[in-house]
Length: 310
Image (cartoon, rainbow, N blue to C red; front, side, top):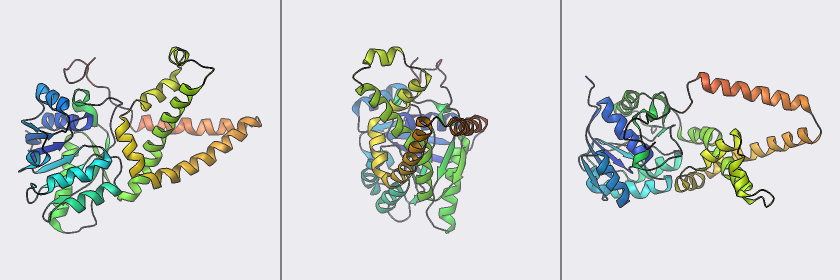
């Protein structure tokens, strides 16, 4: 029988990640009562209809009352406001974490809002789909995914115990856990996630703007590569707007390097330097194989269940 790590879980934001976390935590038996706060009336109605929470509200303070673990699953730029709304109602000894794709600015916002006696442990599950909302969640989303925790520079035993308990929580959900400095996390994610999304948004926008190619042709003749870009570019626009604003320094640094490499690739194509092209394509093919060997392909939801529309 699984050990209940947190008698009460409060999730602020019941979208894809928040609702998946609840499903996974309940399936693993590591939480007791579950409360959800969401600003959207429609989302709250779906959370109730799906039976995800014991208590659903629009009031963040109501949701976090007596919670042992509070997870902020809202867009990155909304983290500070959500944390401030929760602050006065937080239980002494509670752990505060998040699921945001940017860590340095989020950590600062959470620490600034949190009262003394509350443990802030920023986190980021590297998992997701282009879908959003409570209906999009599924318990297997975190299975064999990496969760990066970026603990504060504290060495006191109660805080270290809180960090370990949160790591155990994510492991119980089937995740692999890595601890990392927040600034380094933001640079790594700028390479592996943020820049690829920026490229996807841009190339889909470019295709839409080409006068000599109609939108119907773009959709009808989409090859595999373009279909992959459209899938990525279909991700939540509010979430990604916030990510690029919050992580602009790291993204711009990586974007500069990418631009230099793209110019070199352009020259190779222009001058017919086939050896350079073959070398690049061979190297990147090996990276793709490494991703597959590491088990980092996205999991497919179980469409036979009511938690995901077919």
